[in-house]
Image 1 (cartoon, helix red, strand yellow):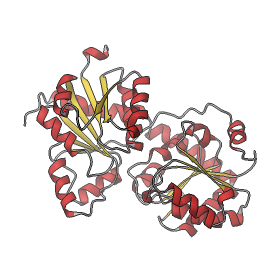
Image 2 (tube, rainbow, N blue to C red):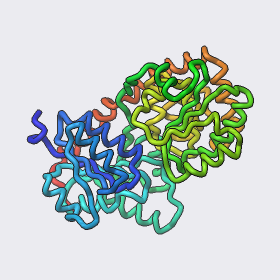
Image 3 (cartoon, one colour):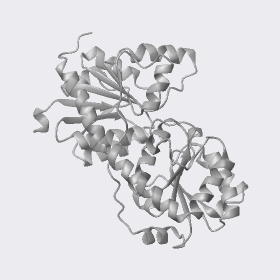
Image 4 (spheres, rainbow, N blue to C red):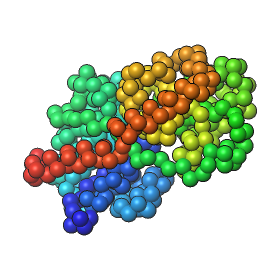
Length: 369
């Protein structure tokens, strides 16, 4: 199908730190671009330039959203948008985009990527008004969907379409990656990928690392990501006396190589929608230690053995230490995780379900306010 004679889908976010939201949008665009004309819209900011560049490299069009630029409704008309698909990282984002879609008469879908975390009454009221303007609302996990239902904030029409990813492809051998990092070939490696924000529980992970290193002193912790809390966490590692065993790598474009070089993936988050990094680890046969929360639990399954309550570093440490000592269980869980990814969390499955929703919107005809 010729992309330029196909319906135009605009995937848009107003988040200035799109992170997993941006990755989700790129995955969806790449999987759907043979069937639709895909336009990705991000704020015109330094923090989003890499996403727009990657979108263009993948053969998709981009639309920078600038405060001093044309109104969004006008831009939607310029690209002949058939559907506006808005992606909200947190519940207070995306409402202006949805309103612009309504103003332009373009059917609008909103995806909520995180659980309902609003506590401010004004924000709650604004969200209720905003979400009612969307024609459909997607939630990235059933657990996330339930938090909105419980708050009476799921919108008038909603559906769960669980996150999916393309299989990561490491480019280097495990030994080569370790050598590049200066990590001994046989050292146990614990890796994580997450923004340095309070949500991701880094302070609990570092506290856990102290206990793990007391039992497995040769272990190395590899922390991939950046964010406002990174300087404080680097200082904390030094104060805890573990700086030589904790590597802060910042933002990287070789995450598959780094994960493939690890023995255990850990995510200490306090809340999640359905974390893409856990799916990446699963797709790479990597065993996971994580907090027993919403979307992470949904990804790994209720019977997964290496889950702990959030904000409990001692329990987290015990589970990481167990994982590092038990190679047979690591292999068993790694294979289990890969099969679960292949059966439930591929990009193709996510895109197929999303495309079915687009077709349902098309079938309803032109949007009327």
